[in-house]
Image (cartoon, rainbow, N blue to C red; front, top):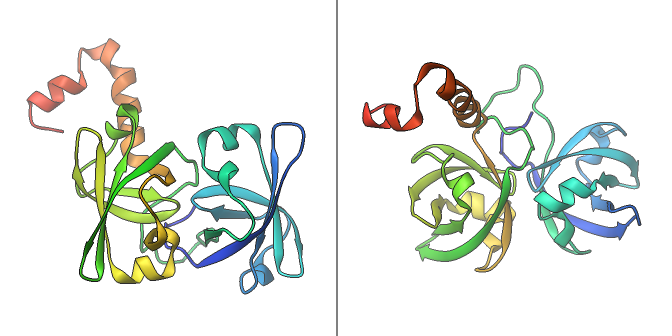
Length: 214
């Protein structure tokens, strides 16, 4: 489990397709690699991966075909920078929100607006993801815990403070860039429960909305 508070931005050193539909990803994690052992989980741009080898500060990860299909990791190239977070430890402060590293879909940067030192990003997502976003709720973009500022029919907006723009890759995003999106696990759980209950109790999401619950 992660929090969406990125510990470092690190550089991709190599990517190699393995001939079986997967990819080997190598990232320079100097400064973090001292605490990483083979088998440990590491979030790379919001995707939970397992370290397979650590050597001279570089960490290798096997990225499976399904992960390549539903995330942006397959677009990474050597010299690209990625957001890196190590797992939350028992007793650590949960300063962001619960992030599992299980990406729900890919979003598209549709707008980048500057407001002094602050940024607003417009992220386009499909209807399935849009239905699980809540105004003022949490969302992880490329592994960064952010707050949904506004929701549109095409996607949503987030506001980026200078610190986040400086210490993550979020401040380098351009229009047309794809990003990994993970919605709040609590929202996903509630939505799934309601879907299962619809056919049993007559309770529907539309009825809850009409009663003012969502």
